[in-house]
Length: 289
Ligand code: UTP
Image (tube, rainbow, N blue to C red; front, top):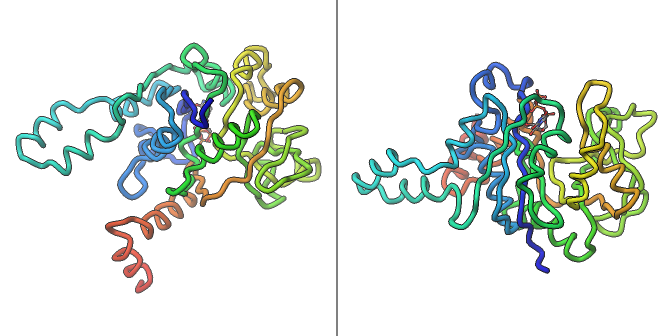
C-alpha cells in the first residue's frame, strides 16, 4: 500500500455558463491562467499524487481537451526542425510518460455525480481521486491531492477537501457536518447540498478535490436525481457515510474558483506574481499601477 492514487477522474462536461461568452466555443478548462490551461494544473496535481490513469469525463464541446493531451506531431516536427529544443520540451511534457489519458462522454450534463458515474468503467483500484479543474488550488510544494492521499494512507478513510466560506454563502456549496476536528481533519457525520444558511450544519464547504472509495460508484447508480434533475455527488457521499468513514480535510493552499470571472482574475494575479520567470516584473508593474 502506498500513499499514491492510481486513477484520477476529471469531470469536465459542464457547460461553463458563468464564463460566457468565452466558453461558447472554448471549454473553460482550456482557459489559461498565466501560461497553462486550467486542466493542466489539475493534471499536474494528479500526476504529483502518483496517478497513472487520468479519466476525463467530457461533453460535446470539449474536444479541445483531448487534443491538448494528444501528441502534436506537426508542431513537434516544426519545433525540432528549427532546433527550438526548449519549446519542444514544453510541448512534449504536457503528459509524462507512463500516464494514460482516457476519455468518456457524458451525453447530457445531468450533474457532477452523474459525470463521475460515467467514469465507472475506466476507474481501477479500491479508491480514486476526483479533481474539478475550475477549483485551482495553488500549493506547488505539496499539491492538495498529495495531502489527501497521505491522509487516506494514514486512515484508510475517504477524504473530501473543505474550506471555510462566509455563512451567508453556504447555499452555493456542498456543506459538511464534521463537529470535531483533529488538526486538519474531522470525521463527517453528514453532508448536504446547498443548504439554506439557517439550516446549514457548518460553514465548511466542499472544494473540488475528493479521494473516494470505489463503493461510491455503486451508490451513484442508485442515487436519484435532485429537484433540478441532477445526480449530486453530495447525496452519494451521504449514503457512503452509512457504511464507511469519510473525513473532511482542511487543505493547505490558496484556492481560486476559476469557474467565475472574479476567481479567475484573482488566480491570474496570484500565479502571475508567483511565476518563476515573470513574477518579479509582473509584481513590479502591478505595484506601480
Ligand atoms: P459547475 O457547477 O461549475 O457547472 O460544475 P458548469 O456547468 O461547469 O459551470 P456553470 O455553472 O454553467 O458556469 C462543477 C464541475 O462539475 C463538472 C463541471 O465540468 C465542473 O468541473 N460537471 C458538472 C460535469 O462534468 N457534468 C455535469 O453534468 C455537471
